[in-house]
Image 1 (cartoon, rainbow, N blue to C red):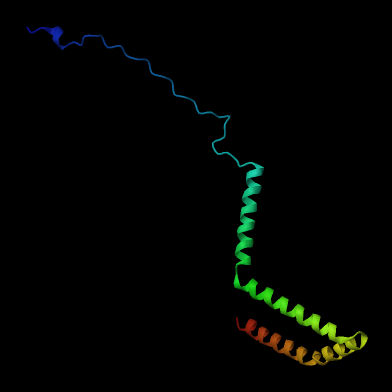
Image 2: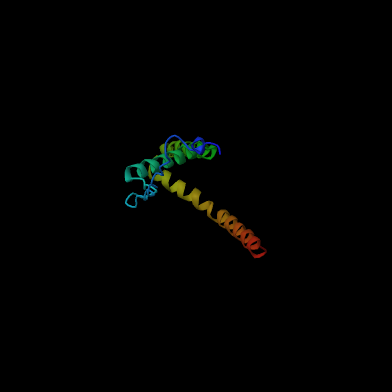
Amino acid sequence: MPNSKANLPDKPYIASPKKPPVPLATSVPLVMKPDKQFQKMQFKKRLKRAYDRFMGSSFVHKSLLAVAALTISVGDMMAASKGAAGFTKATTEISSYQTPVSNLMKAIAAVIALVGAFN
């Protein structure tokens, strides 16, 4: 019979006790809510991005140019009007446009009504 001690390890095997599982911390939330300062900063960033995108559009550039031209032309007309006589002249000129503008608005309303009716 061969030596039975040859198959045995030098040191006896000692089973280590199992460690208990680590419990999850329930007092700490898994998802942290951003604080008010962070939310305010994010809102400011979004607002600035929207403002930059709006101001960068060609529509705004054209609108600002139109408003500036209108302001300058109205200022020149008011300077040339010379008081009450200018106001009466402007009133008669504007009232002369009342009938054609009214007819134009009625025509536009009729077209919109027809398009809406067939939609």
